[in-house]
Length: 230
Image 1: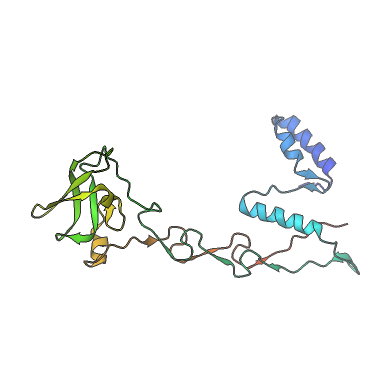
Image 2: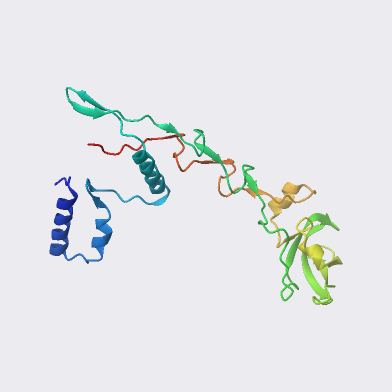
C-alpha cells in the first residue's frame, strides 16, 4: 500500500492509473478537486458532511495553537469538544412535525374535508358524534346546484333499520362533524360513545416528542476539527 503525501505525486499516479485502466476522462476534474497540497481529501456528503465542512471553515479561521517541543518531537494540543449550539448540549431537539406534542391530526393538516361533487353520491362518511345510533353513513342523493351554493345531501345509514336525513354540503366539509371514509371499529370503541378524536401518533418521533440532534449526533458535544499545521 502506497501512502501519498504530496498532491502532485498523487495526481501523477492517478493519471497513470487512468491511462492503464481505461477510466473515462470526465472523472479527472472531479478527482482534481479532492487532491490538494496534503494529498487526497475525503468527500463529505449529507448532513454529516455539511457539518464537517462547517467545522473545517470555523477551525481554519481560528488562530494556530502553540507548538510545544517535546523529546518525541513537536506537538500541538488538541482543542476540547465544544457544546453543540443547536441543541444547547442536550443532544435532543423538539420534534418539528408535532411541535413536541407527540401526536398529529389523523385527518391531515387541511382545515376542512374535501368534497368532490362529481363523486359525492355513494361516498362514505363517518359522523364524529353518534347520530340516530349510528356513525357510518353513505351519501344517497344530492339536491341543489353547486353554482347557487345550495347543495343538500341525503345521508343514509349502512346497517340496521334504514335512517336518512339531509345535511348541507358545508356541514359535510366540517371536520368537527364528519370524517371522510369509514373509521375502524377500534376507533369507535375508543371513543366510547363520545366524540371521535382526531389524533394519531406522530410518524416522525413515534410519540417521543423529541428527536436526536443531527449536528452532534445526540451526544450534545461537537468534536473540534483539527486542521494540519506545519
